[in-house]
Image 1 (spheres, rainbow, N blue to C red):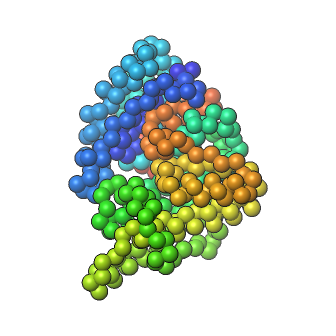
Image 2: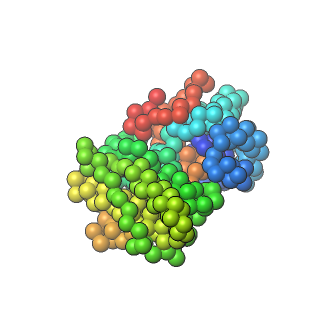
Length: 336
């Protein structure tokens, strides 16, 4: 089954064509150069740039796959969660395409897609498994029972891991997107130079909290400025990266014990972080757990992962009508 997929949940416009778990074409139009001057994504600018990019990407995706729209079997699109203005561009384009061609329209949840990115890189991967989804807006521990059956067993109560990285990087004067630059600088830093807190959540041992950690980084930076001391940026990057990874591994180890995990999957943009990938894989190797992570090019937002997940949604009866809407927030477990 050949599926044309569209992703526009934040600041990357993406169109791909997939056949089962095989990617026939995958294109992404990045907006980083437009948002870098603001230090983050400006939603209105993002929406406008999606409008400018999506039509040409659609045509190029068909061209690279050497297909016509008549040879496509279904249209898939991310409809939640994300920046609602950005989502609406993709949803509107997909609805128009579905209506004009008579192809079925498959709505796909963004986090489900990130998990499905692993199916591209690891063709033999099948549920059940434990998934750690880490991105700029989400930090979730998910018990993936089947391709469309999810149980969230832990989540952040405040900031996501990626948000902690990005905002700390901005406070350190690093360019947007901060998390990538922070990861690179951390490779040359001393991860014991600063003592940073590891916030805990009392009500659920698997829930995360990163707001206090982010605040501690801000306070350390501000205290140094007030004293006229120049902070060592690589050292702070290394300490923050290590602390976030320590927190993630602590929750993973608890989940492994509670749920008797034998397969662990990383997903989301922050799964590209070099220390997180390295240390989680080491943990799995030392505990006889199969470890899976997406190829780096599929860690961030892309449409190939949407197309792969859409096949399972389609087989599960998830077909949308032409009144499909976009949603800024939506739980991964129970879809609208």
